[in-house]
Amino acid sequence: MYTFNNIYIDRDNGEMEVKMKKTFRIVFIGLLVSQALALYTIESMIPVPFIAPGAKLGLTNLITVIALYILNNKKDVFLIILLRLLLSTIFNGSLSTFMYGAAGAILSYYVMIFVKKFGKDRVSIVGVSCSGAVFHNIGQLVVASAIVQNIAVMLYLPILSIAGIGTGIFIGVTANFVVKHLSKLPYFKSLNLDL
Picture 1 (cartoon, rainbow, N blue to C red):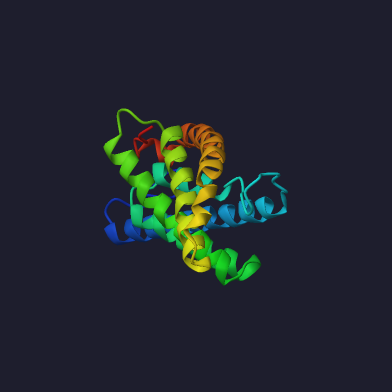
Picture 2 (cartoon, rainbow, N blue to C red):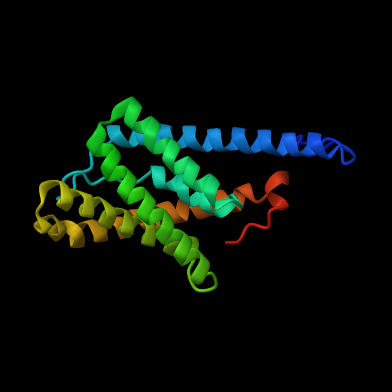
């Protein structure tokens, strides 16, 4: 049996089917990582006139939220986050940006999974994105206060939380739009995407 997107080649040959699924998975993860890196590069060129130093729009989190809703395996989403962090640090960062980014991204990843799982019927993709944005800021502030050894850095939390909620809404609405349109593609129709 042949299909349009070459996911299933032959039902009788299970080995070939598994290889195509694995190849598609690797290519798709690579595409998501490259999109996240492109958004990271674009975001680093945008001046953000916030009061808090280092505040950004969080465009790369768009890929994380999309991946969280379209990939069945949450380990793949974590892999995308790790690859994005490592490659963005290699291309345009330093050890401190890696530490801030890793703390924020990993904490927001686990919070988004928690909110998506336990708030399934009550929280939309926008709410999941907002919770991820706020906890991304919390993770970064915890690392910053540990580096400077001063808890006063946490005074930026109210400002960053308001900014995080705003960017979380933008990222959530955008991710919702993308996931709804991806669900119309032949491969993603079979996944029964949960919005």
